[in-house]
Length: 438
Image (cartoon, rainbow, N blue to C red; front, side, top):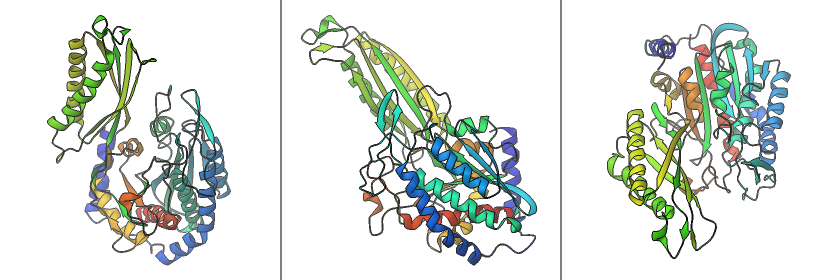
């Protein structure tokens, strides 16, 4: 943790825990916010459906960014575009002096063939790794953009009563840096000044996931896993499939490496203290059924919640892969690249946020102590810079068991549009109540 971040976290924690959370004037009434959100919903639904039908891959969100920028400019905001290639930053300065808070939404879609059957389902294509692929909003980012656009309009309508400044961050490439790009969307936006002028004191964000419709859930400290991409390249010696002893069989080596990684994870990590998932998801080798190839490549993902444990597991995996390869007479190249850091929710800010989210979702619909999840989010880099809280919005269909809902990244993933008002209210209230606190 940098000194600047430590100082910001400590200052915020002291202010929140010491009770320095009184408003200098009367807070904006909840019924006024609810009325404004309700009036905004036809636009939010229309934006969501338009974005869903016109998805764009990471760093190619040109249409989405243009729609967002035009909307923010129409609301009278200061707008910066091309912050991190296609990122957009809007700044709403309230009518009264105060602090600065940021809200964030991600904009990119995925190379997925949609199978929802929606009347506005995507038929779009894009280019990924040199190939033309189907593109779909299979992770709900269409809803994220639409909800933050709606929150921007609601807050702009209350500009005179806002004690401070709200920064709206519309981020590209949350799903990771596309091939050939060194940084994903959050890190690139930070590098290009998204949090610099004005600098927020806190940042909030949300993500739709399968869950009871309209519920909000999160946890303090480690909430979403750090994500690493793992790549292994094996070099052997090509031979006839009938004479494996005349070559070096990289297929056998690859199979042994998969088992070794699975065993290392299952037998050396206590899952009750530090949840860990290590998955090899691709294996590419060979062109013909009776030829043992010279090379094989594997790739996968490592999800962790403890930095020291992650580093130890990576080091032991590197040694184990080299040992397996050497046993067979092969050689191995092993590399690890971080896609997202641990999403760490500031403890004091997490405690402060619970009643605010209850205003947005209603009693009994907020869980501030949900278990950690092994999916990842590059919001983590934003909350490394300033104290932040990231939370989830349950978006399963009415009457559907969330455990059987199509998960994020699946062809059937969809968002229950009835939960969109909850997300808009959560954005609005987390921003305005934070600025009202002092």
